[in-house]
Structures are given as structure tokens and as C-alpha cells.
Length: 130
Image 1: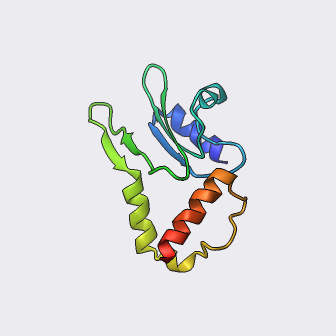
Image 2: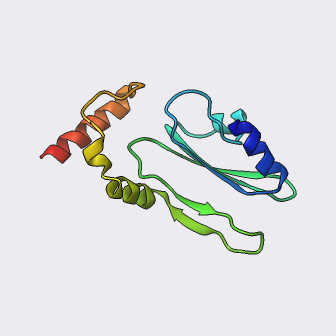
Image 3: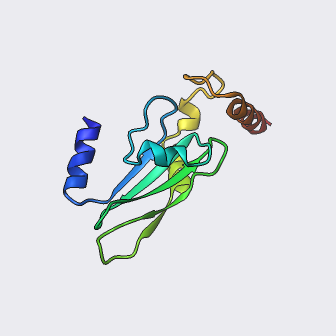
């Protein structure tokens, strides 16, 4: 269903911004596998697909322990991009939604984090308890 809707937007000449926070499985973004394979190692990915003569795809890969990126969001053809400060937006939603009180961060993640990410998460939780 998602891929079908994605293609409808492409067919109608829409710019598409995809924020992929999936931790396993197939990446549903428009970026082709060869482009994803050329990126540095990442846990999460934001892609911006700009329409034009040929669709141009920008990729913003990041690791769990990185700050989320600032992303250039395309508007109408003659308008300048606006910048989405993704980390600030995420922090606002996390705080406003009181997720720190609702999510049990001390429980293991499903699926499990890799050793690098788990070590980072353990340090972050330990620092927040102090």
C-alpha cells in the first residue's frame, strides 16, 4: 500500500520527504539500493526526492547516537527550501507527548540494538539516572 501511494505521488510530480526510523526490514524509501549501498553506515535515513526533469534523491543517513539531521524541505518549484530541524522536532514531540514517562527505556529494544548502539544507550540511560 505504501509503495503504491509513493508511486502515485511521484506520478503526480510531488516532492517526497521520507523519514525512515525502521530498525530492520526493507527500506521503503525511493532511493535505489545501489545509492543506499554507497552511503556510510547508518541506522536511520531521511530521503528527499525532488521532482524535475529527473527525480533527484538526497539522502541524510545517521546513526542512533548521532543528532538527527537538519533537512532541506522542498516546497513549490519557485520557492526556496525550508529547513526542518529534525532533532528539535523529535525532541519537542517526545517532551510534549511525555514519552519519557510512558516508554520503559530500561527494557531491551525489540529488535535488539547492535553492540555499538547498545553501549551508547546504556551510557545515556546511566547519565540520565545520575
